[in-house]
Length: 234
Image (cartoon, rainbow, N blue to C red; front, side):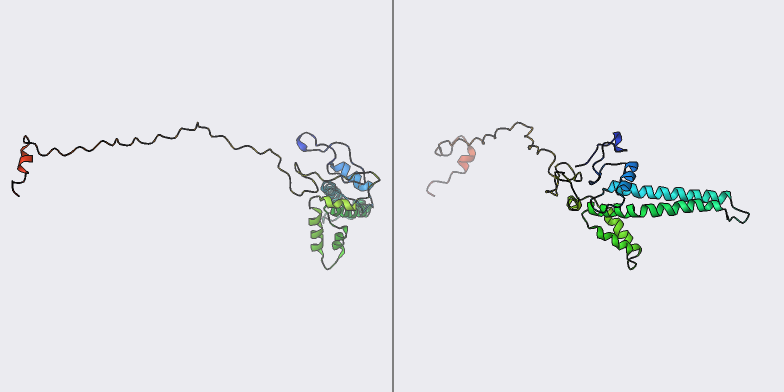
């Protein structure tokens, strides 16, 4: 089950958002950022792939804007050697530090909820903190966060009494109890024979059995018959 339909063309998700204790499988960039900030330090529950990737994109955009601001100030205040000692450079650096400090907790929280939605424990995020794994640990966590949603992630929800969990949408005929989609089209009957059935051919006529006639003997009118006649007394 998913919340909210897609806009024409499927470009921008529209529709009401689900409760905060449930994942939003159809959501846009702005709503995903607001949702992550409202669930600032919520490490239980689930987060859809849209929530996770929209938040990551917002992080990249903010870093890019701050970096562009830093380069612009540096280029405008550079001396002949190409260096800048302007105090204005402290502004983007301060913004960057505030942004990192302000978003590190919701970034960890949305990653943990994304792992839950994929059906895995949020403890996998600790691979980022192990120096023995280093960059490899971060890649492993990112791969797990990119996995599709799993109905088993419902066990990480904290539902209110009488509240039904929101399950990820699947193909037609898909249910959580059946991992394989049911056949979505009725079985077509076998096509009938397009040609009319021809009758069986009649058997060949049997030759008529005529009664055998006795041999009349040689005819005197046939000289060959006379020539082949045996001489008398032989």
